[in-house]
Image 1: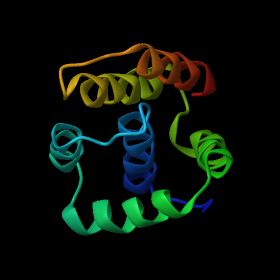
Image 2 (image 1 turned 30 degrees about the vertical axis):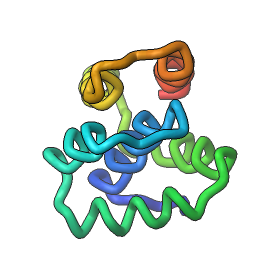
Image 3 (image 1 turned 135 degrees about the vertical axis):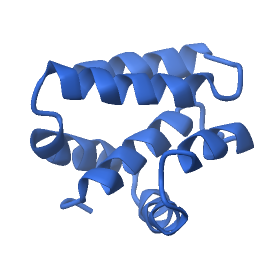
Image 4 (image 1 turned 45 degrees about the vertical axis):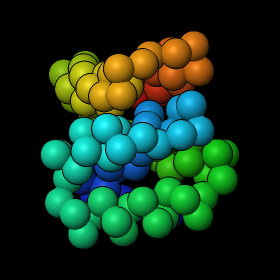
Length: 106
């Protein structure tokens, strides 16, 4: 999965954040669903689930060039990622690690 639309890219990144602790909670799904159309969420979720972790990182790396063009784009996406990380009220060490990795990757 390489060429995503901007909304698909955002959804993919948000799912990556939600899956940081290998457990996507209802609260995280609700937080993502508030930002994404249901049909887009389902389509991207199915792609996300079919990809390996390496594929996921590659997809984010490939698409960031198109959608994260400046510091403002990066800050906006990181803020959305934080909302997902905190959606279930827990920001554990695995989630912190993934957040800092995404911060560097983006």
